[in-house]
Image (cartoon, rainbow, N blue to C red):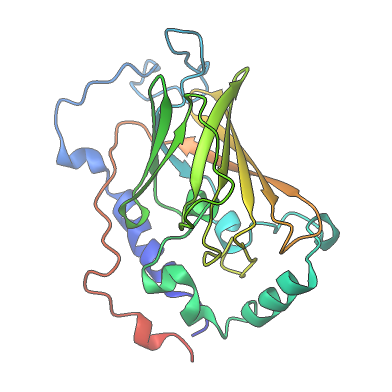
Length: 257
C-alpha cells in the first residue's frame, strides 16, 4: 500500500462529516438566507459586515480533494518550474515510496496551503484586527493579523507560518512566511522550503461559495512564483468536531517501506 495514512485518516473524517455535526446541538440560531423549502440559499448574495467589508465567516470545506492529491494538478510543468533542488525532492517522493515520511502520515500538520484542501471543514472567524481559521483537521488553527503589523524577516520557523492580511476591495489577501520547510504542498510531494511565501486571496463569490487564489513564491524550490485557485463551499447549520489524529492510530505499520 503506497498511499499516505492521511488518506485513511481523512476518509474516516469525511465519514464523520456525513453525520451532521448539528446532531450535537439543538436550537442553533441562524440568519442564513433560506428558500421556501427551508434550505439555505447558497447562491444568495455574499454578506457584508457592518463596516462594508466582505464577511467570510462560516464553516467551509474544499469542494474537491484534487488539490490535496496534487496542488498543481491543473497546471503544466512549465507553469511551476522546479529548481534542481526542488526537483530532486519531488522525484524522491512522488512514486509513493516515501509516503510513510509524509508529515500528515505521522499526525504532523499539513502546512499551508495544503490544510485548506483536506476533505474536512474549517471555520473562518473575523474581528476588526484579525482573521482566525479553525481547522477540524488535527485541531489546528491560524490567525492573520489585520492591524498593520509587518512580517519579521527571519521569524522562528513553524509548520503554518506567520500571517498578515489586508482587504483589497471584496478580497481578503493573506501573506504567510516563516515556514519550517518540513511540510509538503500536496500528497504528490511538491516541496516547500524555509524561503517560501504563500499568498492567499479569499473571495466570497456568493453566500455559499469561496475562491482561494493561492500563489507559491519559493525561490529555493521553484524558478518563479506560480498560482492555483482552490474552491470551498459553505457547510451551513454545522460545527467543527474534535479530530485527534493519534487516537487509536493503527495505519502507520501498514504503510509501504
